[in-house]
Image 1 (cartoon, rainbow, N blue to C red):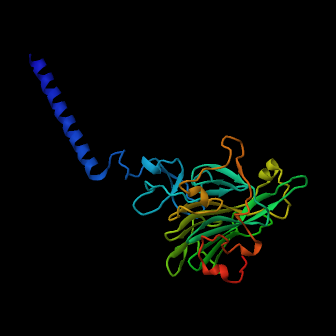
Image 2 (image 1 turned 90 degrees about the horizontal axis):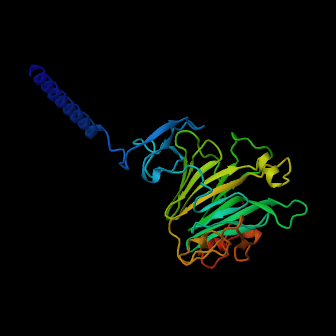
Image 3 (image 1 turned 90 degrees about the vertical axis):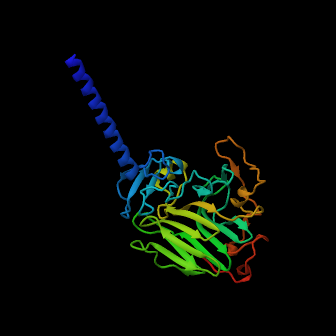
Length: 328
């Protein structure tokens, strides 16, 4: 009986100890931890720093942060916000413009666009926003169409023009900046890489921010209440040149832009190669399911060479369209 009583006492003591331990752990959790399913918690593991020294982490939190993409620390409170921000263009995402140009429209449909080297095309044309693209390219002997890439973007709004462009580069070097920015015709000489990595301009109605997201060749552009875009300059590599048989010359890396747009206040009547895909009544004319769904060059989207910076759509109301041409 004594042995049985002792066993019961020991068992009771053990249960009390376990319950107190659980209470303490729960108390600690309430004070300093959150549920692993709380959207605000920062579930991550650290990665090696970027070339600019910024911390990087892999987001594992639920919600939009769980994208299985790299995140850069965005604020002092978390390694990865729940709304994990891409710091480079996502060429598979909505509003992207990459490669020989390939779009992903606002409707989610991917399509290629047959442009022309040296051509200027309206990407977006709306009441208060015009975005034009300048194409570079080449046509190897025997081909009936050009290979083309976007070399420059001209963003017009209010009475201002912002140009983002890739410089011509003979030999590519990741450590040399091949990106150039112009504001109302004037070159922005230095977008800093240390400390405050932003260049800002205040227009009459809205602020413009160009922020470096890496030491060279990658920026995030914001035009308040109109558009945000992530832009990267990249070359055509040797292997890419070989696989696609571009037959590019040795003295030109064909530096071009990869871009992803986020539009904030488009109207229902927006036009342009990309813009019209955001219309609520838009139905894509491209053939779905084919290897390279293509939208051909349209006269309604091509601009005269001297009008890269200006709108040709009646919808865009900007006094700049009446001023003399200013080249990129």
